Length: 137
Image (cartoon, rainbow, N blue to C red; front, side, top):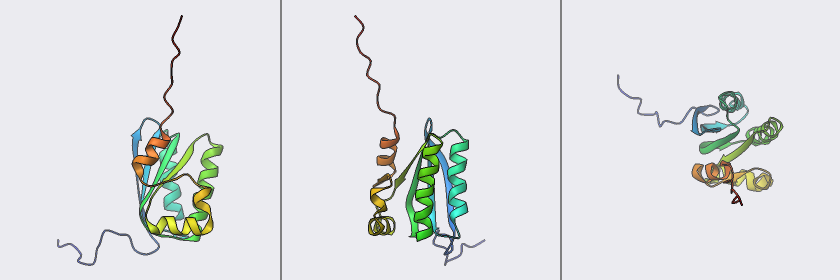
C-alpha cells in the first residue's frame, strides 16, 4: 500500500487526535494534534478523562500540535481547568506557538490559565515541591 501523498499527519479540519501517556507518577500528558474547536471538544475532553481515570492528579495538555484553537476550544480549556480544580487535580497547558498563544493573549486567557512554553516546563511546574526534612535534634 502506498502512502497518501496528501497526508501530512494532521487530522482533517475540525478533527483532533489525542494521545495520553504517563510522564511521572500522578502526572499525565495529553497530546492534542489538529483543531480544538466545537467538533473536537469531545475528543479532547475524553483524553483528559482517560488521564484522570488512570490516576492523574496533574494533566499537562500538550497543545504544540494544535493547528487551530477556536473560541469553543478556549472555553473548553477554562471548563477543564475549573473541573480539574474541583476534583483536586490541576491542568497545565504546554504550547508556545502562535496558534495557541495568540488567541489566549487576545482574550486575556493567558493570564487565567497555567500556560507554559513546552511540555518539559509544564511537567516541572506539575512536579510536587521537594520536601525539606528538618534535622532532628
